Image (cartoon, one colour):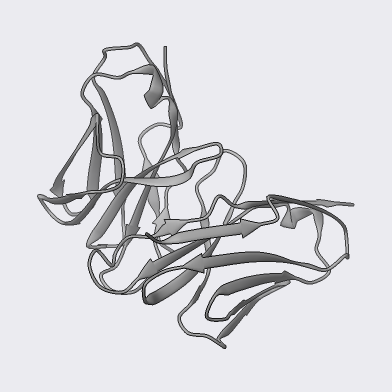
Length: 112
Length: 112
């Protein structure tokens, strides 16, 4: 069974204090790892897709990286508006390969 | 930009009522999904549709059914609502292939 574990569950940062969120996964044949941002009471907003180990993607203050066992979402000099829950999900190859398995998320709070 | 809309943001229903949740996407995507999201459990897939009139069960289909009569529209039906179906319901759509899913704003359903 595919598993996605995100850590920490919650993270509180001061504005400008860089940090990383972790997503560890177990999947039989990775066919994509996805990062989403979710604001309270809203649907998840797509951020990145990573397909193979060593791949990196960047968007503003966010950078996602991928290894064979985990992904990191690095947040550089965060601002209060980066506060949200960040979700990680994986898609496996073969079978019902449309399906995403989600982690439970990391709640990020950035204080001014 | 992909736009996924859901018929209601908030809904309150009584136990035993039949409930319809509707989702519309405007990007001609082949695939559409219904998830529910609960604290501590994350996002769980209820049903998936890969074409008009085609559907597959997800991880938690019990107590739910779906309908897809037109490509842009995917409905989730609770035949007889129960209190344990109180949740946030999220619809998503995706173009065919190894791509990201785009989510709607969600419907928070309360069953009393």
